[in-house]
Image (cartoon, rainbow, N blue to C red; front, top):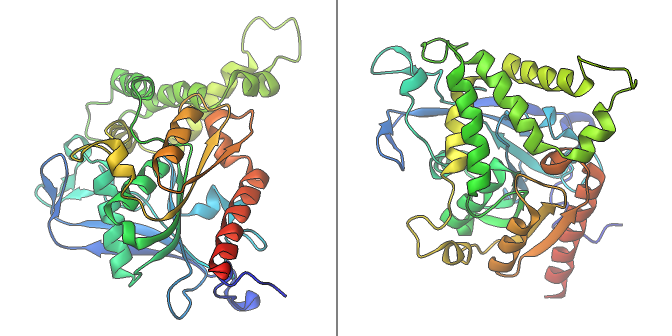
Length: 366
């Protein structure tokens, strides 16, 4: 018999509901103001849900995806949302929405501009993480969700977790920002700018065409991979089998493969818009400071860092844990660098399970 009432607020009939994954579109038909100025005449968000809401709607898990993610979290984070995991879909209603600016069904650069009847392309307005989470919050309200049990996300998604928890502190019981920061560092901005320069160097980039920049995004992704992974990762996976190799190295082929893979599934316009949103991330903007902003967060917080992360160094997560009241900090040990949060599932599940169990024991004691 379990003594974890909050960890399993709603046990579904596994035979009927366990695989109940639904893709939906949320439409907002009013003017949507943007932080950097300007507006959209409306927006849509594609979102995926898994499991079912319980009667008091207290079993919601909300995921914010990373830079090139989609709303279908089972495509890239499936191992965290299966039977027996801390976020067992028999117990929870799991939601993930494709971010504003994305290319997986939400309003973005490829969407039609009502003013011209053509896709936005280069005319898509600048967006920030605050705009993105404002869109998420409209969806939350439409779904009739007053409080989210746990909000989590890594990298760009982690930035959105923080921003949303600051904007709407009463809406979250728990948050788990992973491999992220209070503001984007000059180092990380420089890496993103180098990738956008690669896209700009593509002779097709100035065109208004869905495939514009498709060669440039290959080079951009190759650059990005170096910041996502580590020296040890490449040494373990891409070392040569023969001492006689003079060209066509495995590491070279791997970079080209990763570039082609992203070009096949993503869009350079969205990559541009979302990396710009990442660069502008600063929780202190328009507030007294980042420290004052982080103090607004009232959710029970678990900050997770990765010990080998080059892009979001672990001191950035330790800073978050120090400044968010009552926050806990945990380290993922990984040779995979920033991508560790997409790889180290066993560690991640153990860390999250302990975090939620500790909270339950405290509540039971109180």
